[in-house]
Structures are given as structure tokens and as C-alpha cells.
Amino acid sequence: MGGKKNFWKGVLVGALAMFGISLVVGGVLTATFLYLGGRNMISYSTTANEDSIVDAETLKKLEEIQKQIDDNYLYSDKIDSKSVQEAIIRGYVNGLNEPYSVYYDAKETAALFEMTSGTFGGIGVGIQQDKTSGLVTFTTIYKDAPGEKAGFKSGDIVYKVDGEDVSGQDLDTIVSKIRGEIGTEVEITVVRDGEEYTAKATRALIENDTVHYEMKADGIGYIQVTAFEEVTYKQFEEAMNDLNKQNMKGLVIDLRNNGGGNLSTVCQMSDLILPKGNIVTIKDKNGNGQSYQSDDKTILDVPTVVLINGFSASASEIFAGAIQDYGVGTIVGTNSYGKGLVQGVFTLSDGTCVKLTTAEYFTANGRNIHGIGIKPDVEIEYKYDASNPTADNQMDKALEILKKGM
Image 1 (cartoon, rainbow, N blue to C red):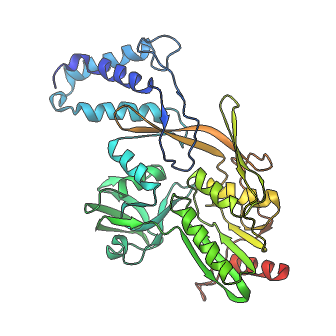
Image 2 (cartoon, one colour):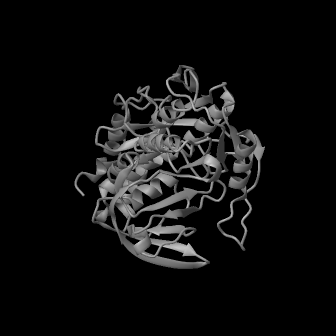
Image 3 (tube, one colour):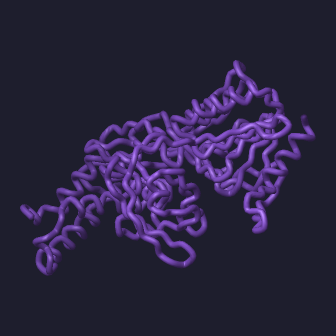
């Protein structure tokens, strides 16, 4: 490793210069908003001073560590400079101790940008993360997709990806490891009924089917939205148009287990339903606000129920909150996740990116639901019926409410 005496100094100057560029919000969001007010979020100088996060004392300590590595570390001649640099930068962002701010290396960045388009190289599974335990599980296995062919099942707990223990990592990071270039293999170890199951799946082009719909009895339409991605608005609009052609008299919109998505997408979808007015407002650290509006070109004029639960987050909460604030539908289920923060994805000079929490959002009536969530108008816990696994008491309640209002 040439010039290793100056290694740490070079790493830090490079890191500081990287973050000192004029940051531009990338055209993605990850948990799950696109914040359109691109600006330089953090300003640094390569000259350390007492106001710097990386101050003179930190630089000195790193130089001391480097000396000990040079003098005493058994494998000092095998150090992978790039890996150490990535670890320093990743640790810098992790040091913010804020769960939604994450650094993505080149591979993770490519997967992240791909993820929000709705088409990607993947294995065809839906996943979610429990906010208390942090466990990541497969919730949906797409039919005939690589994940199904590899033997994965709904309810599997993700343990390792390509041999790496991903326990405790955030959902976006794990997803970025599972997705990748079409035709490449990914090995995943899951825990199922207390036992480990490991299989390899070959990534394929997955067109994320984020909207599922049908016409139920009595003219009640049903639309399930699993995520708010770029493809979702068109799928949702097509579902609405088709159900309207079938003379829909009531509508259930199912946002249970929907962890969020694009801000622009949820606003477009809300605009198909809401009267003219505010959908959501976001405010940055300086109190600067931006409001997203609906027009009155299309307004849903049938009784509506929106189903939510503890895994309905971010964009789902914007949608449900707007429906509730305008009184154009009934919210049914259990309290939502409570994520009222906005993330921006900033592309760095080397093509990697950093996701940072940049703002908070407020529902149409000005509610800040972070840490609180959306409280349903009608609260009902889901009860699993072992004798009838397809039974859904929350859906039954939604249908009951609609029939009374039709």
C-alpha cells in the first residue's frame, strides 16, 4: 500500500471535500420521500477547527491510530485502502445516530436508484421491517419469480445475504443487497420455524406490481397498494378507471403493510380523490415550507374506506391523513407507523450517495404525525383465524361500513 503514512489524512480530506460539494437531490427517495429543495446540507472545510465535526483532535487521534497500524498491525501490508475509506465515510453518517440517514456505496447506490423506478433486477419478494425488533421478513413471494423458485416463503426472516449477517441493518440497505444486476446470483439465508434455510436465486427483471384490485360483491371496489413507486400512479389510475366502468358504488383502499414511497406519486394519487386544496406540507430545518396541492378535476364521489396498520408508513400516512382530514373516507384498522420525516438522497461526486433526513411533513390540516401515526376512525385489530386462514376481520369491517353508507 503506497504512501500509507499519509493514508488517514488523505482519507479525511477526501471525505470532507466530498461532503463539501453542492449537493443535489437525486431522483429517488427511500423510506420514502423525494425532497425537491436541493441544497448543501452540511458545510465543511478541509482545515480542521473547533467547530468541525472532524476537528484537530480527531485528526490527531486517527494519525496516532495509523502509526500503531503501521508499526504493529500484523496485516498492515494487506490493508484494502478502499474498504477502510468506505468504512470511515459510512461510520461518519452512522455517527449521526439517526435511523433514516444512511451512506450508500456505489453498488448500493445503483440498487437504490433502480428500486424506486418500479422495475429492477431482483428476486420478486416483498419485504418489511418490524420497527421494534428490527427483524426483516418476506411478506410476499411473487408467483414464478426467482424467489419462489428458490424456495423462499412468506414469513421467512432474512438473516444473511451473500454470507453477510444483515441483522440490525436498515431495510433500504438490505433491499439494496438483495437487488442487483439481472442475471447475477444472490445467496440468502432465512430463518423459518427456528431453522436456517439457504438458497441461491438468479436475479431477473422484476416489474413491481404495486397495485392489485378487484370488484367485490354489491359493487364495492377493492384496491390494494403495496408501495408508492414511479409505476404505482399509472397502475392506480387504471384500477380506478376500470372499477368506475364497472359501476363502482363503494371503494376499499388497502394500505396495510405499505411502508411508503415517492412523494410525487402519493400526491398524484391523492389528487385523483381529493377536492381542491392542500395534500401535505413539508418544512425543512430553517422552517421553509412547500405545499403540495390537489385540484378539482377529479373527485371520488363514492363512499370510501382506507385500511391501515402498524406497518403503514410515510407516504401511506400522507394518503390516509389527507383522506381523514378532508373527511372523504373512513380510516379503519390499527394505528399507523408514525414516520413524519422526509429524506433526500444526495448524489456525491464519485457516484455514491447519502440519504439524509431533511424535513418533516404535516398532513392537510397541519398535523405532525411523527412518532404518533394516524389514529383510525374505526379501530379494529386483525385477528388470525386458524380455521379459516383467508378470513380478514378488518376487511369485513370495511365492507360493513361501506354497505351502511351506500
